[in-house]
Image (cartoon, rainbow, N blue to C red; front, side):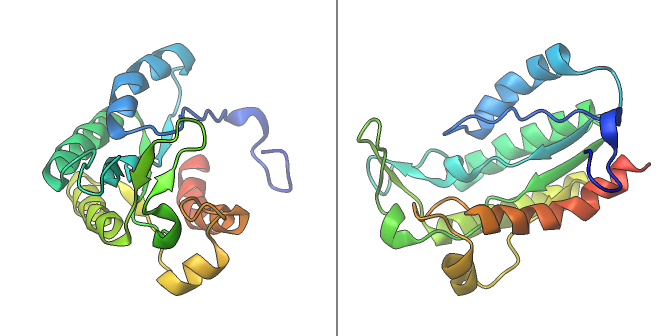
Length: 183
């Protein structure tokens, strides 16, 4: 915000993320967060949620959301964001994972198991694309070869982007964000 050509104090940025958050978490908390933190001025939402809806818990077939449930939940969220903000950008949950590390992925705090697969993430990413097209929300995805993504942009846990991965995602978001910041 304060770098060369920065926008200074014209804007504020809030991160309302939470580890293991699902779409339901955002649907439940967004209205209150907007009420408590919003300033009644232009609101731009960048949402990166849905990956945890695609996973399975404890067993490889015990999914958090079916594709139909995901579509319904994501539609509800996107409609809510559209109605309560001036601009919306969804970061698709279709990024790639290193399945050798995510099937299962052991939670270091609880010992619980989660299962993340590329096929399921891509399936849910297609739903993101469909819904964003229908509702009129900008979509940012990982538009890179899976092997390149896994080699250069995934953190050692096999699931999350590393610093270079987040930089790549930011570089995809930035032009869209700039459109809304300068208007």
